[in-house]
Length: 419
Ligand code: ASP
Image (cartoon, rainbow, N blue to C red):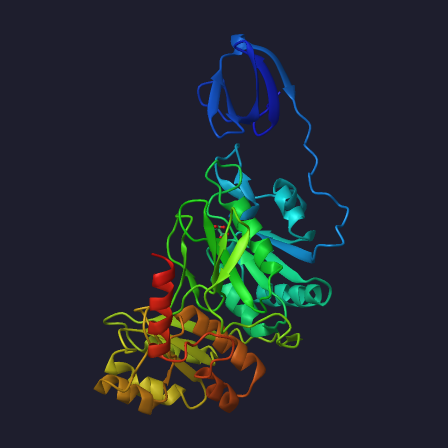
C-alpha cells in the first residue's frame, strides 16, 4: 500500500513514531515528524505501521457570547497550503475550517465562521476575483464585526488596494498570508492568523495587511492596504509600508496592539458602501531606456482607457513619447508613477516632466505604481473621464500621503518607537 502523504504511527527501533510519510528515493520509508525532523526506516526495522485517522478540527463550534463574531474567507495561497509529498511542491489544499482548526487560539479572541471562496495561488487572481471577493466581504460586514481574508502573499497588496477602493467600510478588513506553509517548523501562518484576529476585532475601520514585522515570532505589523508592498521573495518580514509607516504593531505574546498612526479610519466612522465596478482596460507600463512609445499605441489601438506609467526618478519617460501621449490623453487617462518606490513624483523640476504635464500626464503623487493601477481601474469603472481625472490626485482612502514633510515627521516618530 502506498502511504506517501498519509499520517501514520510506526513501531520501530524500540519506540513509537508519528508523522507524515514522505516520498523516498532510496526505497526506505521516510517519516516527517511533527517537530519537522525526518526519520528513515528500513523495512526490516518496522514492527508495526498503522494509518492514523484524520484528526478532527479542534475549533469549538459553541459560540462565546462575550466575544465578537469574525468571518474568515479563504482564497488560497501558502497559508492554505502544505507540501504535496507526491510531487514535492507546495500546493493550496486546506479548507478554511482546517486552517481555523489548526489555530485553536483563535477561539480565545473571537467566534469564527469560515468559508472557502477560492483555493488558488494569488498569481492566478484577476479583476473578476477581486469583484466577487468584494461582494462577499461586503455581505459579511453586515453580519460580522470584522473580516479576515487568507490570501497568497504575491498579489495580496493588489487585492488589498482593490478592496480599499471598492468598499467603504466601518469595520476592519484584514488580509493575511504566510511565507512558509503550516506544515513547516518555520511557518509564520499561526502567528499571522492570531494577529489578524486581534486586528479584526480592534477599533479599526479600514483595509489592512497583517504580517510578521521581523524574522522572529515577536510581533506583526498592521500595514495600510494601499501603502504596502511585498519586498522580499522568502523572508517572513517581507511586507513593508511604503511612503508611510505601519498603522500599528501587535505584540504576539501579550496579544496587544500599539497604534502608531492616530489619523486612521476607525470603527463606525464610515457607512458601509460597495462600488464594485472596475475598468479592466487599464495597463501598467514600466519604462526603460530605449523603450519605444509604440507600446502606448498598441494598447490604445486595443481600446485601453487608462495608462499607469512607471517612469524614472521624479516621473519621466523619454521625450520621444510626448507626441503619442499628447494624442492619446485626449480620451484616456495617463498617470505617472516612479520606479524609485520611495518619494513623490514631481514633473515640474526637469524639462521632460514639464513637457509630459503639458501633454496630459497626471502626477501620481507618492502612490505605488500597482496602487495607481488599481485606483485607475476603479475610477474609470465608476466615474466619467473628467471626474476620474479629478480624483487621481485626491487622497481617497489613504493612498496618497499628504506631504513629504508629514511623511518625514511620521518616519522619525516610527524610528524612535523601533530603536
Ligand atoms: N505564490 C504564492 C501566492 O501568492 C505565495 C504565497 O502565498 O505566499 O499565492
